[in-house]
Length: 158
Image 1 (cartoon, rainbow, N blue to C red):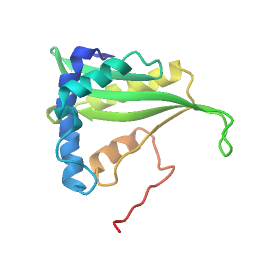
Image 2 (cartoon, rainbow, N blue to C red):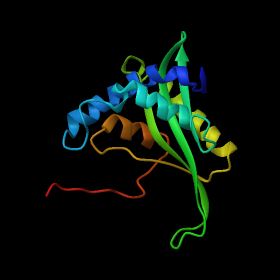
Image 3 (spheres, rainbow, N blue to C red):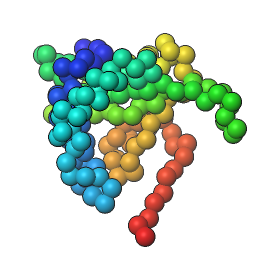
């Protein structure tokens, strides 16, 4: 079942997010900390509480047997009178995680479909996200959903 997150969900959300943080830290320890920001649970809960009612951002969770097994955070923003871009409303996925024990079981698909519906209901024209190049499983999932590369960020250590 997919539903909008409530404050009590965030400790479970942080635990799942830590799994992805571990993947990121393992691939790019020069960029990602070993500890996930969720380790300071009080500070994170305070931030979530302050932003939970933000009309432009939503966190959705997937539950199975009263346990959170995945989540997605979506934010709606607009380009209006931008000097280079056409005016448009965009839904940006800022965080997307499925518990490792539930991956490849349709949970990600359900969450993605839910965000697409949310985006359409809110009048957005595009869906976007950032995925790290080393995260091949995530990249393949997003490509299966129909996303394609629009821009690339490249870096080097100096």
